[in-house]
Length: 98
Image (cartoon, rainbow, N blue to C red; front, side, top):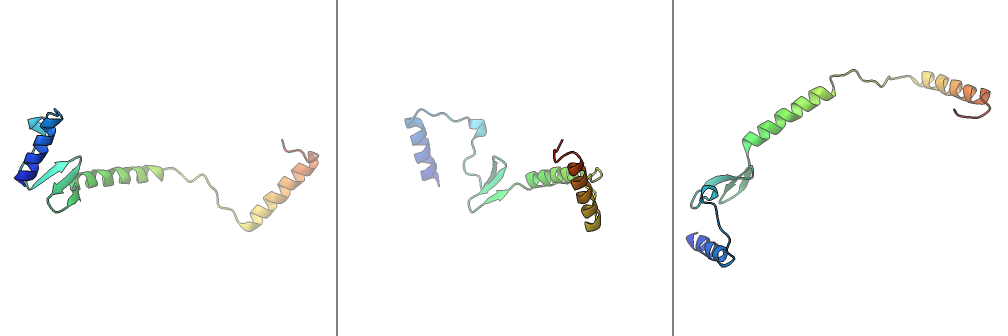
């Protein structure tokens, strides 16, 4: 593990790349990086981030359905009557849609 870190540091020096010590962590078994928990074996989602996203989704879903649905359900008979009325109006206007 330290050999890998040594090679990495040599490459960084070769290209004159500097590291911020306050942002570096060497020899740790687990750490957070970009909101992901990183271990030697796996990458895990951060439970705090998941909980935060779930709360946002709940708020959005509640606000999306808080208004009355503007679409009115109609029966087939009502739809047929409306279609006939529209055709009648269109005929009376001389076939012009205005």
